[in-house]
Picture 1 (cartoon, rainbow, N blue to C red):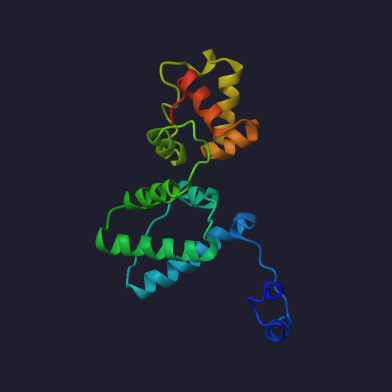
Picture 2 (cartoon, helix red, strand yellow):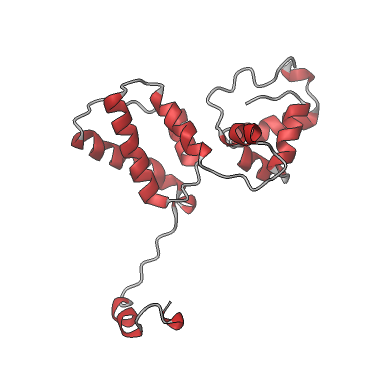
Length: 182
């Protein structure tokens, strides 16, 4: 920045005494549950809420999320969750907020329409009935491979596509071809 004359050189050298490199949450997935629990405890105490239950599956969806806004986004999401519980007090509200969180992500593939994009970003909150009209043992190997990748990525389609070495759009088309719903 100081090379572009947007930051004072002398101030940079004064502040550059100790460098601390903190990786993003994307690189520290194991810290997400700890940070979430910390923020949850803080906001529950601040807003005088006693009980908020987060299931292991919901926590896994939080861990799988990319968190482009890093810790600040996790902090504000947790506060929003607590406030939502304070005013709404419904258990399904947590799933709703997690789905909203996933809808924020944009998909760079232009060959999907808006409805498909909305479905693409949502995590599967229930993996029963993933195969429409197909018995699990009658599926072709490719469909089983897709299902395995989806299950391994906790039904995050972007990660499943990456693991399979295909684009999200291709994964979506193959899921449609084999009647795999999520």
